[in-house]
Structures are given as structure tokens and as C-alpha cells.
Length: 447
Image (cartoon, rainbow, N blue to C red; front, side):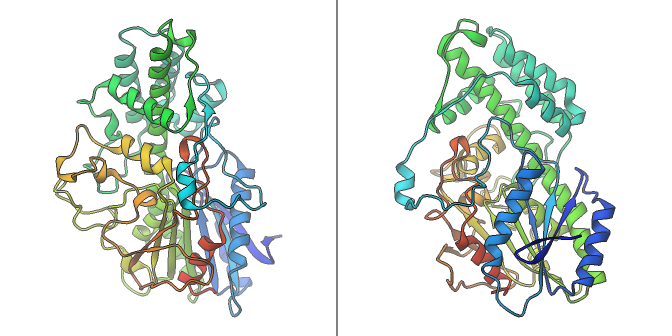
């Protein structure tokens, strides 16, 4: 029996890392859509989650918010997309408590600081097992990194860790760039011309800025105290960001090879079905790259795309990519004609995961003088700055009328709403707001 949220059917779709969908679930969805005579189907992709219950809670809570904004005349169903991406065990789990969040204004939120225990710089056995399951082609490389993080430091430690991290990233085998940098199998922070100690110290400093408290005792730092501990913490953070960079690339594969063709099959079986795509974090990349997996020519069933703190390049739709760095266009340039409605980018300045860690991991070696006052500008994310060179408005209250245009991007600055601080990620997962649900409903004319 199909499960429901607020009386509306909800299905689950599992994709593997190559975009293959569970055939039984796909068949059940196609048959269920037809038997329920749905007019609209909302597909939501998570960015990361730790288990089935976390994903289920995310979808049910967000779909409940959306249900409250849906008007009459629509028979709507929901789909929760699952794909292999996982949050590290020592990072805060997104808040699933349905109780209201504290009312904090955007300006106040910018001054609120939280502290947290950074924990040991080593990788626990459960976390190591998680990473090996996610990246089965890099098991031995992960063992090497874990062993170096657990060993006493020496003058050669930074160089050895840097090389081990490069080998992990290359062995993981995910390569699917957005067009903001020349195609590569590894993130820019592991460029061969970068200095290992500088990379690790930079990540440690950003963790400290976010409120991390480091254990400065001897321990794994081999008697080097504060310096050794921070160096290892920075290296561990570099591994964390490398694994997220790989998941980001995987999201593009799942979207293009899996979700796009699925939408085409749904359209073939239910010609009048209106599709609405919503994605959070890496899930925003999943639903965006689904556009690249749709057949060209003819009308598109996709009526709206809503991105919540999208964890991919803000230049993905640009043509050409600016700054004169790369003679190329964004990987999704020209794909907006596959949306019969708007693509809305909701972003927040309080998203530390995207505003700080993402560009540090993505950037190539050296500063970019052409970027002016912001040397990280070429590697900024959708969820921290919005899509490049597109109209921008502020996220308003429920009932706000937005200037949506078919086949066009509208940026919505959500910095006064998406503010809840959650450690090193900041407000990255603060997505449970009626104002955001209203955006998705109104963009797809569901209200």
C-alpha cells in the first residue's frame, strides 16, 4: 500500500552511484501515478543523509510544509529520491524536530557564534567503514589516510598526508565538473602546485573561525601540541571536503543518467503530468543535471525547479564562464529551455559549508587576480551567492508574488530566514521554512 503525506501519495526511488534506478520502485511509481490520476508530481532530492530514517524524516517534513501551500484543483503526489551520499558521523544531523525554530533575525544571526568540540583528528572505524562503502574503489587509499591521521606527526607528515589524499580522490573515480574549472578527477585544493601545510592550516583556521575547539594535548600530534593537532584536524577536514566534492560530482551523474531518463519515462506514460523538481545541497545538483538527461525537442514536463542551498557552481548555467579563466561555458548552459517555468535559486550568506569550505576545496592553485576583491569568486556556490548574473530578489513571506519567468533563473536571497547555525556547516541544512515551500508551490502554480 502506498504511503501518504497529508493524504497525498508518496513514493521512494533508490538510485545507485551510476544513476540506475530500482526497477521495482520505478514500476510502482509509474503505475501509481496513472492509477491516482495525478496532475502533478513533486520530486525532491536530498543532499546527504545518514540513514533511511533521516531521509524519510526530511522528505515527510518538507512535503508537509509544501502541502500547506497547495491550492485546490491539483492532484499531487510526492517522490523522495535516494542516492548514495552520506554526511559524516561527527557532523550535526539536520534538524527534523517539527517544533518551530527560534525566531532570530538575519542581522542578529550573523553575530551569534557557537562553539563545538572538534573531536579527535583520527577517523573512527564506523566512519571509515562508511567512507569505504561510499567509495569502494578507494578502500586502500582510505586506510592509508586513516593510518597517517592516527600516527605521531613528523616533518614529513603534511607531505605524506597530502599525497595520500590526492591518491584517495583520484581512486574514488568521480569526475563530473560544472564548467567552472578544467575537468579534473580531483578537487583544486589537491593541485600539485599547492603546498600541503598551507592547505591543512587553512582548513584548520576556518574550523576555528566556525567555533571548533581543538584538543591541544599531545595525543596523536606526537608532542607538537597545538600546532600538530591543528595540522591533523586540517588534514581530516580536507578529507571530509574531498569526500563531499566526490559526492557532488556523483550527484551530476545520478541526475543526468538516472533522474532525467526517469522523468522522460513518466512523461511517456502520463502525458499531461506536470513535474516539479526540488533539491537540497548536492540534491540541487541532482535535479539540475536531470535537465541534461531529458530528451531534446518537444515540450518539457518540468514545470519548475527549486534549489535549496545548492552545493554546486554558481556558473553552471553561464555562457561563457566569466573571469577569462577558462575558455568554456557552464555544464548546464543552454539547458533552461527544458523547464516550462522558472528555476529558483534560494541562497543564504549564513551557509558556511558553501560560503567557506566549498570554494576552498574547489579552487585551483594560486589566487585569481581577475576576480578583484574576492579571490575565491570563480569557485563560489549556488547556495551561498546565487546563480551568476541572474536577477535577484529577497525571500519574502508566504503569499509573496515573485517575478518568475519561464526558462529563466531567479535568485532569492534567504539570508533573513535561513540562519540557524549548526557548527562548521552553518545554516546549510536550515531548509524547513514555510517561506521556502511557498516558493516551490508558487513557482509551479500549485498554490
